Image (cartoon, rainbow, N blue to C red; front, side, top):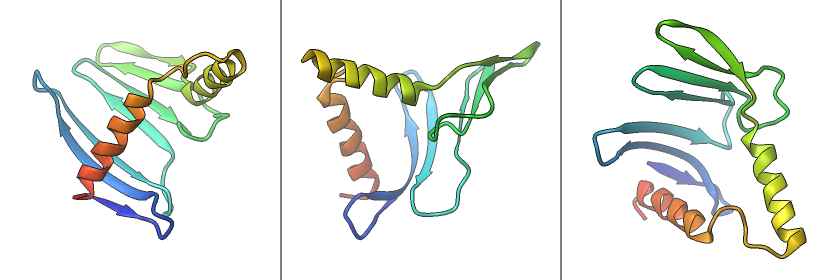
Amino acid sequence: VGRLAATGVDAATALSLRFPGGATAGLHAALDVASVDELTVVGSHAWARLPRAFAPPRDEPAVLERSHAAPAAFDADGVTRTLQRFASAVAEGAAPPLPIADAIATAEVLDRARGG
């Protein structure tokens, strides 16, 4: 499900996804409500938690936790790295770091979630 803001941009989205091979994913994102800015990825043997995942700089590191091992902190500031790669590509006249087809595919998934 999804909801557009008055401006026409996606304001909120909730998705349940199923992938080939049986993997599943759940996503909830909202731009116009009070929310926790955190990303959690859960796998079969471990999970990663990224506090302030979408608003760098973060004051806490991301944490990888495994069932039978001590937690490990790591730098996961993908937002900054993505912006740096994009700026470099523009400055050098190169192709963007992510193909435009990826952005279009993401927009199509969000459109389908809203029933569009």
